[in-house]
Image (cartoon, rainbow, N blue to C red; front, side, top):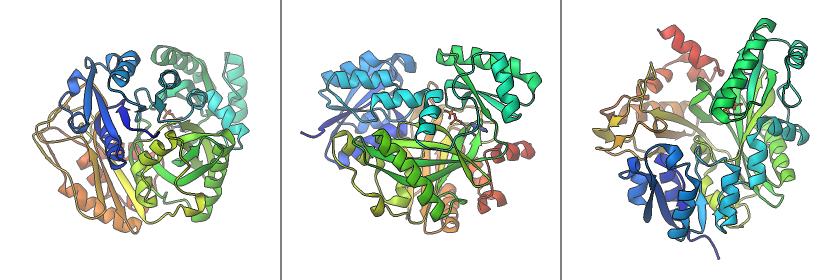
Length: 448
Ligand code: ADP
């Protein structure tokens, strides 16, 4: 009994993150990798490694047959999908379980429900979560779209039911723009996600993005681990995240956390999940649920002292949640900077050889990264190369430490987002926590 060998179906920093948690639990790891990643750190550190295909992700990290074969050949009894790639692919989760391999993730049926945003909203509504006003289900024709948009008031947002990663959304300022936005969104959704189902919701003018971390045992018990504020975004992509949110009081955290935890308990949710809300004028509006570990999970780990990957593995192994809600303590403040291999201000990708690498260190400083000097960042995948996560007793002390850590960090040979983060941490609005999802793009525009 008990998981003994985990296949890590991912790459980069998250593959390393999973490897570390597994080894700390005495569990062996098997890395899978494309030919482009043969020299990657997670491949070097894992107990075993299997090459699963050529560089393009569709042929390797998304290649279900090759990953399942690797798991069988290497004798793995569990698979951790990380984030991205196959992590929210319900069919893959089904196949893993059909092979008698433990899926370190939610029940496939819940991945399926939450992966369809129309279904997700319907389910969230039934579970008592507050929703963004909008269509009750998919929009099938222009008249319906017109009527509804007039009712909720412009601007509205047309969203693809299968959208993700900030793609598949169109803002509609007035009724005149509705028809073309609708057909554009449908076309784009069809080609990007193979599904042209769209729905409409009110476009909130200036909200914050606040999400709650949840965990369920799959048998009706669930807890929340507080919120993360991910409002600093560019093109709907998160750039810097913090926990707790500067605008949420402990009472509000308990109240909203209680609502999401009981929703998860009612669902019988298993494993880690994130419930995303937009927050405006003190009100929460559900937008979607992610049925996986998030990039920004370490800020939650810093303020709760919990290892979220360890918790995922325990739950997949059939164990109970390691803590009760009453035992969860929130202490201090944590901020994560996503460091990408790109120009800090034009955002043009900058892959290539890392000639020098020095991660920041010192008290309460954590760097999750697979970088090393001499490593070649391949051009095929996501540009995130490191996450710098810093803890402080207060938000002010966290920011002071974060500035110090950014100044220490060296990534030579390629451009990185370090100068962007350094500049951000000089802005009054960031220092005071006074920002919304619009703030970063507005600021970038005024800088030019
Ligand atoms: P994805 O799955 O692509 O991440 P989300 O539904 O989570 O899509 O939305 C991503 C981002 O898009 C949000 O963080 C927010 O910045 C913006 N957004 C989504 N819905 C709305 C809305 N109704 N009004 C304003 N902004 C929105």
